[in-house]
Length: 72
Image 1 (cartoon, rainbow, N blue to C red):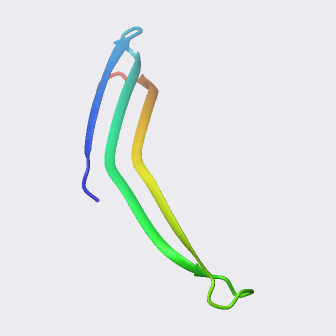
Image 2 (tube, rainbow, N blue to C red; image 1 turned 180 degrees about the vertical axis):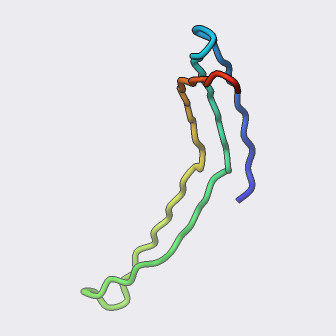
């Protein structure tokens, strides 16, 4: 499925080697819907329609700590 995503993030240097990062990502891939019919075996000719829908969206938060080695 096609969708879209939007994110933001940033970092903060604690000292010359250590840094904290925080990122947020929202992604929306729309929704998905399906329907089908279940035949009830106990009753002749009896059926039950079933419909299912779902939104395909995510919210992601990433928190990280980074160590920078000397010489890089």
